[in-house]
Image 1 (tube, rainbow over the protein chains, first blue to last red):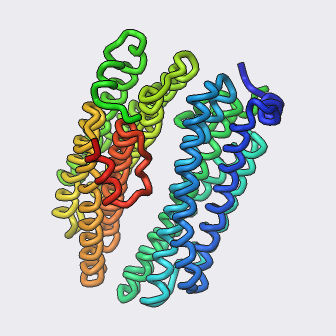
Image 2 (cartoon, rainbow over the protein chains, first blue to last red):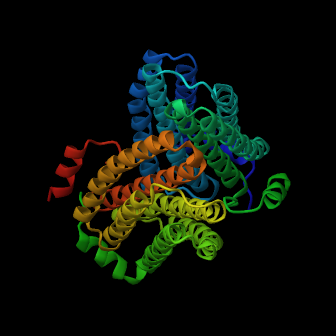
Image 3 (tube, each protein chain N blue to C red):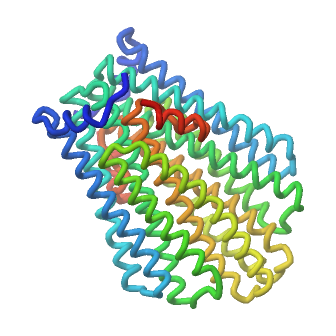
Amino acid sequence: MVATKEDFGHHISQQFNEDLGKVHAQFLAMGGLVESQVANAIHALLDTDAALATSVQENDAQVNAMETRIDSDLLQILALRQPAASDLRMVIAISKANTDLERIGDEATKIARLAKTASEEGESPRGYTETRHIGNQVRLMIREALDAFARLDVEKAFQVLQADAEVDREYQTATRALMTYMMEDPRHISRMINVLWVLRSLERIGDHARNLAEQVIYMVKGADIRHVSFDEVEKQVFSK
Amino acid sequence: MVATKEDFGHHISQQFNEDLGKVHAQFLAMGGLVESQVANAIHALLDTDAALATSVQENDAQVNAMETRIDSDLLQILALRQPAASDLRMVIAISKANTDLERIGDEATKIARLAKTASEEGESPRGYTETRHIGNQVRLMIREALDAFARLDVEKAFQVLQADAEVDREYQTATRALMTYMMEDPRHISRMINVLWVLRSLERIGDHARNLAEQVIYMVKGADIRHVSFDEVEKQVFSK
């Protein structure tokens, strides 16, 4: 049996399922925080803003606290409410996605640390255009994935999977270009490797956003599509 | 209420909890496979063995299938058995740890791909000693974490947390050394960056092994110690 958006909407609006609705809302709030952490970390790097980088590092504790709180609330729901069918899938999906959000927060913190290094040791002569571009892409992926999570929108989730494939390609191109620059200008290898780490973190953030989207498809369609071919996923998503 | 090893042993041995025992065994089997994937990926790199690298890449499908199977079985247990207390914590811990095992498998596949690149483009003049050393450390961490999972041994789990801190330090030292070599010998930058990626994957594997260990402490002690200071964790682990 496949749950529809209406099933979820119906359930969440009911009193008996208030707890699940609250965790869902907490999850989306955490998503908003994590999204702004990524945005600020990238700004800190591009604008050499060490103070902003520090605030990203400090806010990570809040992300961690939200992760712990959400998992604890999910445990309560499992223990006391014994949810079934689509509710149970939502609990599991939020539990998995919670980990991904926290990891996105970790990557934002890594970027913030690299932004600080860059503000101390000097900027890389190359790689910022690519960082800005891929940074915008993965921020959009996070937003779209959270939006898909909020609306239980599998088509939007599918778009996030497509966007991740594009990010992976651009990441490959950007890193190859940076390696070429390093060979041409070995004096700035250390600075360019910092940008390489930033790009790597952005690529990882894209992977985590894709994981969020996969959980949306799992919640709504009841299908585990994590290791399924793209064509097969497309079929699942657009089936009625 | 804190569960003891005896509680778990008692539960798992009972008929009514046969399903959970089976998933626990599947999880450990998957752990064994993942551990050998990491070992083979490192061997493939150090021995420039492209055939072994290919077999690691091929076996990843098996790791993925096991992840899917375990999550599906956990869903069944939650839906049909409605486990409580320590059983419920074990379900959640295996669910989280399952993701970490699959990600370790992904990192092994990345190392295998880099091993292939190295066998085609030539070896890096530097970094293999560090790769071997850190590789041995993280393999041991995986084994110890799985052993802690099997025996519900929180003291062993705590040792894995300590080992991860050591791996992180050695990873930092190794990457700094490699960057220095790159500046001295820019002709081989591309090959050395491949080793840098391998080291990064090993460091990530260490993080995932630490996550496994954290889940052991969660199962046995009922405490979420993911974002808790080392001293505080030590207190939890050694409390009766």
